Image (cartoon, rainbow, N blue to C red; front, side, top):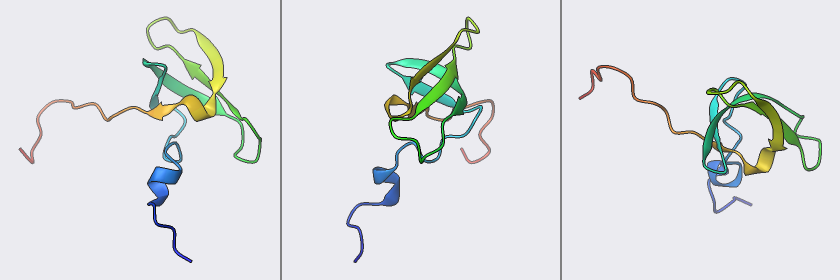
Length: 76
């Protein structure tokens, strides 16, 4: 049986990696680490790049941050 929704819709945080910028409640933070997928209600460690403060949040509340545009875009 095929799933009607794309996998990306089902697992919106699957593409996040350690060091990536993420959004948590409107704040852009850096993902420092997280518990394995097998842990129920897993947590993630994030850091505020402006202050250096690190804290734990619910992993499911994180969203990938859109890529930043930097410099000249040769495709433009």
